[in-house]
Image: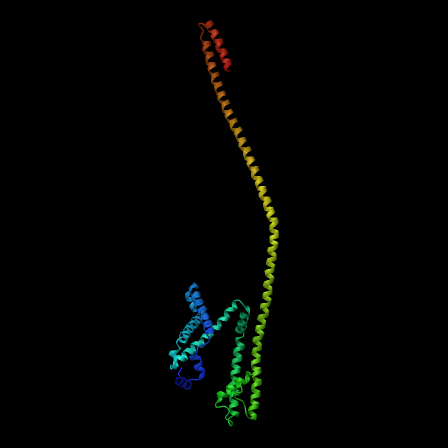
Length: 340
C-alpha cells in the first residue's frame, strides 16, 4: 500500500480496524476456516433435503440460526476475497466486520453434543428450573447498581472523578462483581466507605441466588447418578434373566424333541391302525358279496320248489298213460331231489 494512503487510513481509522479489515490471516487459518464453512454448508443442505417436513424444519429456531450463520459465513468469505473494494468504503468495511463477528456464533453448535453427553442437559435443566432465582438476581443487582452508582456520583461531585452517573453505575457494577478494573476508583473518605459497602452487598446479593442455582444442579446431578445406576442394574438383570432363560430353553428344547418323537410314533401307529381298518373293511366287503350269493341261491331254490310243486300236480292229474309216466315221474323226482 502506498505510504500516503496508509497515512490517510491510519488518520481516519484506528490501526486495529485497519489490521482486521485490510490484512489476510495465515493461509492455514484460511484453509481451516474454509473447511469448517464447507462442513456447515454441506450439513445444512443434507439436513434440509433429508428432513421429511420442510415447514417444520424452518419453524425450528436452531435451524433458522444455522441458515443465517451460513449466509453470514459466505458473505464474510466473499468480502474477504475482495478486500480492495473495502478501501475507502467505511460502510462496507463495517459490514464485513459485522459478518465476521456473527460467524463466530457457529461455536454454539457445540451444544448439539448434549445428545451425546448428558451433563449438558443437566446444566440446561438446572438453569431452566432456576429461572425465578435468575430473575431475582438480575432485579436485585440492577437496583443496587443504580443506588450505589448514584451515591458514588454524589460523593465524588467535588473531585469530578465521574463525568455522569452512568460512569458511576459502571464502577458499581465492576465493584459488586469483584472484578475491579481500576479505570474508576473513589478518592474521598466517604467514597471509600460507600465502595466497601457496595462490594460486601455485591457478594451477598450474588452469592445467595447462585447458591440456589448450584443446589438445583447438584440435585439433578445426583438424581442422574442414581438413575444411571438403576438403569445399569436393570440392564444387568435383563442380561442375567436372558442367561437363565437360555438355560431354561435347553430342557424345553429336549422336551420339545421328545414330543416330536412321540408324535412321529403316534403317526406310525395311526398309519398301522388305518391299514388294519382298511383290511377289516375288505373282509366285510367279501362277506357282503358272499351274503348276496347265498341270497341268490336261496331265491333260486324257492323258484325250483315252486316248479316241482307244479310238476307234481300235473303228474297227479295225468291219469291216462299213468304207467308210462312213472319212469318219467321217477326221473323228474330224481331231478327235483337233485335240485333240492
